[in-house]
Image (cartoon, rainbow over all chains, first blue to last red; front, side):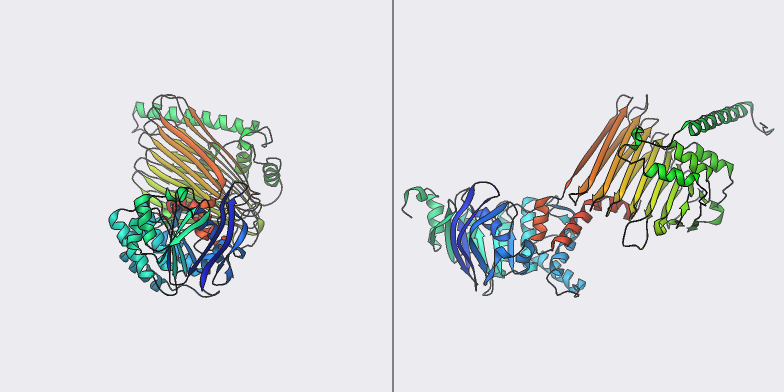
Length: 249
Length: 377
């Protein structure tokens, strides 16, 4: 049971190629970090896996527990267990957090079954407390007027509520202060389980100090060029990504 | 004219002067109805409004032998506050003096068919909403007059039920005295049908004499709806708010025209009209803020926003300003466009099916106005 990406090529629609043959397998229960310099294709990888309409898959495959991801629509992928915590969570004016979450959870229920409102609110409030989110945010529009850190926390709240099998965190640490980083990381760590895996995209070691990855990959020019253990994070922290230009990969 | 003995000379002169003015205005109004022509393509106020179809067909119906029939009921209001009298000359005179936005000829025909309706003289405040229902399944020309006395607080909900393809043409006059606070909702709709049907035209004149008024409109499930709302501000310190929220479906034509007329300065008016367009619908908004000479320190705003869910929908948005005074703060804005792809992707990425995602975003788009309907005033 794993997320398997084989020879994935993708480009911006009618534009230049960005992913140039990615091969990656993330088994259930593991946390994989994806690092890489700016423009290497990290965010593109996350968006392509989730089905963002700006991108076009030109070759390769991605399977989630044997299911062909690219044969599914965006919402089907989510309901099948895929989650993306956005680098820049989107504001949705006029739609409250509570209604948004209810719609997302309702969509996961069998036809004709209604979400139980009391249990829903109880769970939502509980998880908000864990993440240090003000309960008043349930009535506020999704991410509207939120600070960068509040938006990231809200995405993690959604992840906790939706309980995905495969979660992609795209630079979740950006915009978070030290305290928020710890709270968010604690939330993610609490979700680590044998039946769930994470792809953590980041530039910085500080997030990976909290969310300790099992495997670290370096993405460069649209390909995974190096895979190792946590020592690779230390190496990047000390030497940056310059070694990619000189070292034989 | 007879004057009571107790009346002073000055009061008698003032009364005579007011009566002379009224007579002159009525004569002028009579002339405008006599000279008015049924709106056609040359009528700028019917631009994009398909006058050859809707105005002409409405005029033909009003001029025909088709009887005007409809029921009217009011709830939540003291009996003494209500007058129903189709022969009331004062009410007819009030309607005669109502401004239109390009539809003098049609208002003239409405006057000839002056039927039932309600005149609410609100001399005390009401905690609960006063509800007026007009219903017809044929041709109907109700009239509503609402006069809120100084300091009165009230909330009026006016429902126009266009049943089974009815054509309802309503005239409304709303007067708000100094210190009064009035919220007036208009809901015009075809009830309980799967397809849009029915036509509704509503001409409204809001006269604000120093109070606060929030006027809201909503047109639903109709084949055609035309709104002409003229808000006139006659006293400093007045606060006039105009809102509309609509989700036209199928082939509905929604044609909205507004004027915010600042006769005096130091008053506020604010307009926000929002529509979500689906299917092959058409929405036209033409608004104008007029600031009279000398109406300094006016603060007026006008905004029209349209979310086009369907690529077959059409929007014509024509906001306008006519400012003849100095030291004013007036602005207008208009924005129409399709659904934000990033918003849609965000909802889809959480597993919300496309149809529900569209609905949530659409509801969110008009929520700002819908809140004005729901929130206490």
